Image (cartoon, rainbow, N blue to C red; front, side):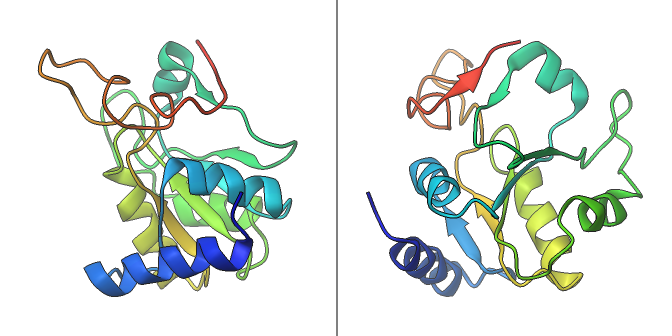
Length: 155
């Protein structure tokens, strides 16, 4: 198991390497460790409600999981209340906030928005919940929270 400092150092190195406009990026296993080491940290799942209902969600510590849609379902319309909802769910700007989506696309956008809104510890969770598609177009088989064997509950 890593320490919080080690996880934040790795995340910061990724920020520098990829010139990210937020605090950094964490792997699924680093995210899970961070959540275990810091009970204040929050995992903000930005997928749609339909994705949660049909696919499942990560299992993390009590009160650490937050769901805020980045885009609304149906229709894919941006959630205009995203930042207000984030501020209600994560009232302290120095709380570590890990953003998660299906494959780490929307989570990057959410991390950018959070950082611009003053969240000092906004992180993208690399690989997402389901990860990339394999050669057959299936997810959960090559990368992601589920593929890495981290705890989750199905739909």
